[in-house]
Amino acid sequence: MTEYRDPITGYQLRRYTEGPERNAKLYFTCENFSVDDRYFFFMKQQLPGRDDGGCYRADVETGEIVRVTDYTFHGFATDREKNIGYTCQNETEVYAVDLDTMAMTKIGDLPAGGRITGHLTAADTGRIACSYHLANKIYALVILDPGKEAEVVYQSDFRLGHAQICPTDENLIFYIHETEGDAFQRTWMFDVKERYVRPYYVEHPNEWITHEVWAADGSEMAFMKLRGHVMIGDKDGRHFDEAGWSEQLLHPCLSRDRKWICADRISYLGETVQEGVVLIERATGKTKLIASTGSCKTGADHQHPSFNRRGDQILFSNPDENGNAQVCVIDLKQVMQDW
Image (cartoon, rainbow, N blue to C red; front, side):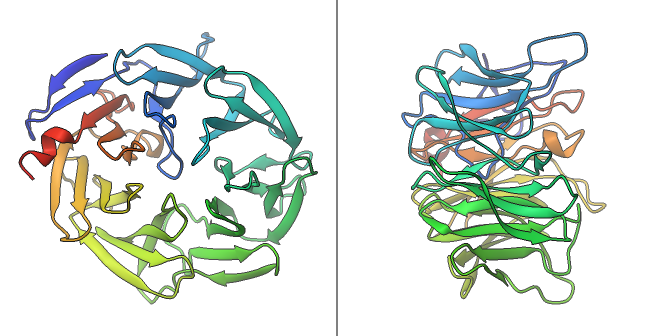
C-alpha cells in the first residue's frame, strides 16, 4: 500500500496494488467491502506462467492482502448484509465463502453445460440468481434456493446479462439485453412467481440507457442516461428522476443511505476527458471530481467506483501507465471538509 496526493484534486489517496497484471475491484453492482468495512475485495488477473490469480481480500488500513479464491473460481460477489461471498467453480458449482474464515461450502449446481454471464447475486432470503447461457445456447435467468436444485425461470433468444436479484425481494430479478452498446430496449424486470417480464425503464428514440444498479435496500435503482445523466427509478419502474449530471459519466453507484452517488468519468463516444471519480450530492445535484485516474485499456479496467458500507470511503480502480486497473481508496472525510 502506498499513499499519494492526487495531482489534480489535491486529495490524499491510497493505492494497494501494482501490475503488470490487472488488479480490479469487484463490479459496482455488488458490495465491495466486508460488513465491518475492514476489508475490500478485488480480482487479480491470471497471467500465463503464474499461479497467483483470483479473488483477494485487502485490509483497508494495513494493506495486507490475502487470497480468497484462486483463478479457477469466477462470478464472485459479496452478500448485501452477511459476511459471505458467492462464487462458481467449473462453471456450474456454486460455493458460499465465509469471509471471516475463508471456509468454502458448496451450496448447489447450476444447469450442466452452461455458464453465468456476469456475477452471482443474492437476496436477503438466501436465494441466488444469475443470467446464464445454457448448454443449448439459449440465454436464461436461473435461481438457486437454499437446499433446492437450481431452476431455470426464464429463457430468451436475447443475450441476457447484468442480472441482479432485488436485495430485499427475491421475487424480482432485474436484467438487460446485452448488445455491448446501445439497445432498443435494454432494461427488464422479471417476476419470479408470475413468470412475467416487463420493461423497467421504457426507452424513447435516441435514448441510451446503461449500467444499472440496485440500492442496497432494494427500494430503487440508479442508472445512466448517456451522456452523463444519472437517473434514479423506483422499484416498480413507475417514477424516474434525474439525480445529477456531469460530463462523460458511465457507472453510477448509490451509498447505502441513498444520499450520495459516485460515478466514473471516462472518455467514450469520441469525447476525451480527464478520467476519474465524481461525487454527487443527491439532494442538491452538486457534482465534484474527487480523484483523477489514468485511462482505461479495456472495460475490465474501468474505475467502477463504489462506497464502503459506512459511506465514508470510495473504492475504485485506477488504471496505471499501461491502462491496467489498480485498486485505490479515497477517504471522503477530507472531501466533506470543503464540500
